[in-house]
Length: 480
View 1 (cartoon, rainbow, N blue to C red):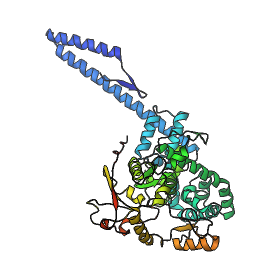
View 2 (view 1 turned 90 degrees about the horizontal axis):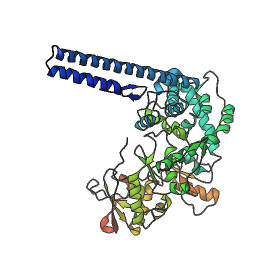
View 3 (view 1 turned 60 degrees about the vertical axis):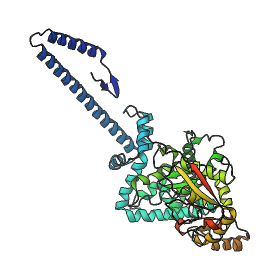
View 4 (view 1 turned 90 degrees about the vertical axis):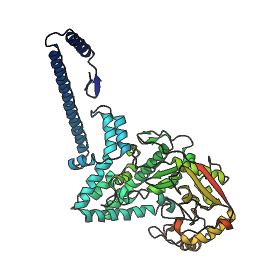
């Protein structure tokens, strides 16, 4: 006999099962004794029991539908009290096709009742999607006004950036993400009949930007540490950071991946995420991706989303092997240590054929990212120096560089040569250093020199000394 469930629990009717079993045995005994109509009576009894069971299951389904409707209505009402329109709530709650978020909900909500604890889980899962959808609807009807307001906020945001050290620009949330903060969202997406003046905008941003940026940086740091397996709890906005957390985040072996993009160390991840959400209201941007920048504004919104960065175990294994081959300690090596050596690598696999294009260590790590066994060839210092002398032309002329002493190149990136000359003439720094006196202003998502492999310098193994490196990589971790 099947179990009958109520309110998510299984209730086994033991007495009923034993009674039914006893009746079945009596019917079977009567059949063996060939009593009159015994077989028909047994069949009628079974049909009656099946009807009762079917009715019980139908009642259970009806209860669950009512329970689910009450749960959905309660959720809608609570979001409505936060000021969100009903249509945006209903549509926004249908958006998450994110396996990580769905698993997060299933693990934490055992009973479909709107308790305070359940509400906090539901809110931080669905609110980014509801916020986004309500803004997208408004964008369709008031696009010109919203675009003008966002440009005004961007101008004020740029003024704030000028008060920071330029290299910090790489680790700030995008202006589109900033506009999703509640206090700023009201400036952009409400009261379309009243013009937004610069004085009002400056006053509001001056009051909220420091806290927004601080919360954002805390959120990204929490995300990074959780990806590394650290347990980080948030209590009323206060974080108790694990001992040695900053050192672990700075390591080159702290490799993060997100949607086929990679970053080495927490600084690299911060730079990668600073570009997330720049097209948050663009019609052609991917809907699931859009709310990621909102989730990054507050660590409580993370909710185990599959679209947030994760630790790349394969990248970590490869970096460990490359560090050993370069004579570095994998437990202490940082990306800057690899950059200072700046060796060149090439691939001799059948896929690459005769291309033999020289790669930096950053490009080399994710070359042929799907194979279980990682194979790469590393040039010696003399051969690498020859390559470095030639491949500079592929990136130094690109206008992606900025001075790190002043804001002269904010939104006006220049070539490396131009910036070095600026540092010399304006700031009197004769021996300008990369990442100290100037930096690559576009976020260093992959190779910080932005060398496109197929345009890189070709390698002739016959003319140089190289070392073959073979690293066994772990299998991809299964996801629930």
